[in-house]
Image (cartoon, rainbow, N blue to C red; front, side, top):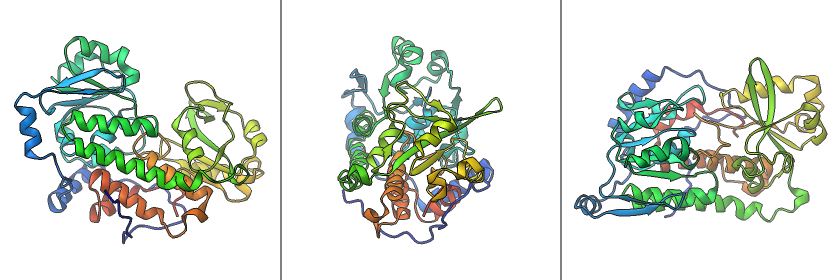
Length: 390
């Protein structure tokens, strides 16, 4: 499929977006209910009748999940649950398949950011049972799911008990571009929407290649030394943290043509705190600030006013950036990593992308994944865009 990148009128432009005061969730949901009725946001092609009839006749479909387990489904799932850790990542992918939001009966509670993308883009969100991050198998079983989609990391705590109870459990990873390619195709097969799964995988693959085909050839000496730091405040204490070498954040910087200075400094399995003295010793060409509460622009501005931060090269040369976001930050292995990759590449090597506005890519992303375009984009996405967008 050719993902045509055309201009999209009405995109709100500014050098530095700041977080917009969000309207109440209920008013956004009411707005979308009307918009969906008028604009047909669920008009993404659904599986053809032949596919559904074939499955409903009792012909089983067996797919292998991220753990290489065979999972057999005899009918297209009508009662879907996704919960546990990193729920926004699994739900963000699942809801790119037509009809899945209406078939979702159980969903992990969102704990990231000032607003919930799933809530404001589904008018019947209130009908879904919300499950805590520490949900137990009994609560999931009570929903009588015919498909449970979980991250592979929660198999021991949540998945195995559900398997023993006889529920079809499908594990996904969704942590790297390669895993996205595999898991999208696998989910398409499980949901009886094989073509949609292949279409989504192709979109992620081709968009990634459009970036890396240009940045891969950039010599090391022309790659800006870069630092991506997660600002965290807990118990009144502020810390700055770098991701592990193997995490997507590190790979995004490399794929976009940067040099992650923290590589080798965090061999562990989670964010690692670094001191300001270490940040100053690295003195990167570029700093990207991440905050999952939605405050990256204001936090960046506050830090940039501090005398010791003003001594850093990236701050002096105005290359201290707030990672963009809409409802969620673009640096993590949510579907938005694709936007984060494109944004980073344009920050590191703008001359490689002359004449290719990021705004077009943002419009294409939400149109391709969720059918959100035109007025719906202007109402639901444009007002919440924040961070250093062109």
